[in-house]
Image (cartoon, rainbow, N blue to C red; front, side, top):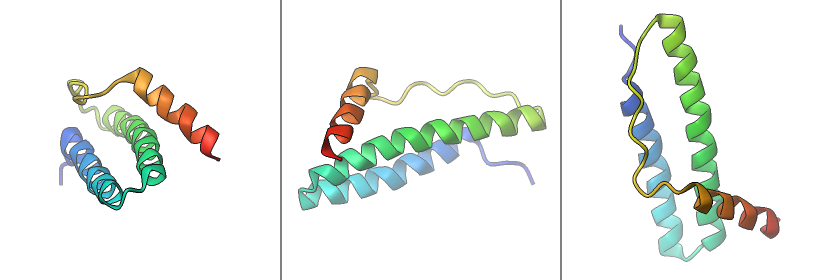
Amino acid sequence: MSPRQRQHILDNLETVYREAYERAKKAGDERRMLDLDAAYQREQLLLEVLLDIRDSLTGTKHTPAKPATGGNPMAAIDTIRNLTRLR
């Protein structure tokens, strides 16, 4: 059985977080939206590391995925800064 494609796994992660984010947005829960945004970024990074390890162990070569649309490192830093202020 061959491993699932990297992009398929990352797309599934994005779908799960996007659905939760939309529910929080509908409910007007801004704190939850910020938490989900930070959690998504953290989980995506961890998952990419694990996928890199998997690929190196199996000898699988992959082409880097194009960056997610709307990805903005400065916005991510602002989100993290805002989260630390809320706690």
